[in-house]
Image 1: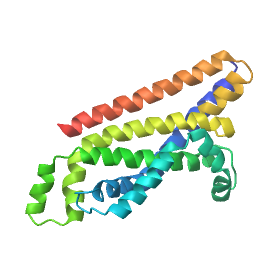
Image 2: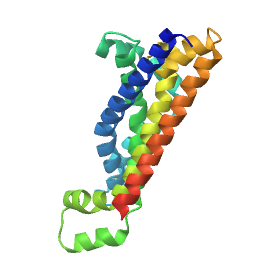
Image 3: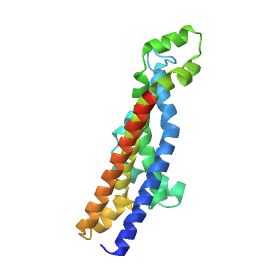
Image 4: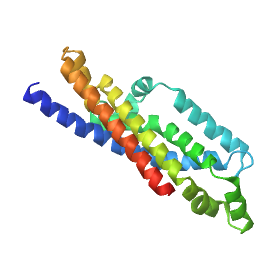
Amino acid sequence: MSSYIIESIESGVFETLQMTFFASVFSYIVGLPLGVFLYATFKGRLLANKPINFILEFFVNIGRSIPFLILLVLLIPVTRFLTGSSIGTAASIVPLTVGTIPIVARMVESSLSEVSPGVIEAATAMGASPGYIILHFILPEATPSLILGSAINIATVLGYSAMAGVIGGGGLGAIALQYGYYRYEKDVLWTSVSILVVMVMVIQSGGNLLSKRVRK
C-alpha cells in the first residue's frame, strides 16, 4: 500500500472513533432516560402508565424497525439542516445517533428489568419515592448489565459508522468502499475490515471486564 493509503487508513481510524464516541454519548443522553421511562411506566411498575408506555413503545419499535441504510437516506435533510452538510464525519453522527437511540432505550429497559423485585419492595417499604428508588436502588443494581449493554451498543455504532460510507460518511467504511471496493484494492478492503473487527473485539472485551469488576 502507498503512503497515501496508509495515511488515509490512519485518518479513517480517527474519524471512526470520533463518530463512534460522539454518537454513543448523544444516543445515551436521550436513550438512557427513555429506557428508564419504558421500564418504569410498564404495567405493575413504579410509574405504571399504559398510554405513555404505549406511545414510548410505539416510537422505539418504529425506530428499531427502520434499516440503518434507509434511515441514513431519510435523515439527509435533517443532517444537512443541523450540520450544513449531508456528507463527512460530522454529518454521519446525526443518523448514527438517531439510529442508536431506540437500541439504547431497549437495552436499558432490559437491564433494569433484571433487577430483583425484592430490592424494589424493600425500598418501597422504607417509604422511598419512585424517583429515589430508580436512582438509588434500581440503576445501581443494574449497573453491571448496563455496562455490558453499553459495550454492545458502542459496537453497534461502530458497525453503523462503516455503513455511513455508502452515502459519503467518513471513517474506515468510506475508505473500504472507495479504495477497497470501487478501485478493487483488496488489501485496503481487508485491512479496513480487520481494523473494525479488532476495534469491536476490544470494545466488547473491555465492557465484559469492566462489568465483572463492577459486579464483584
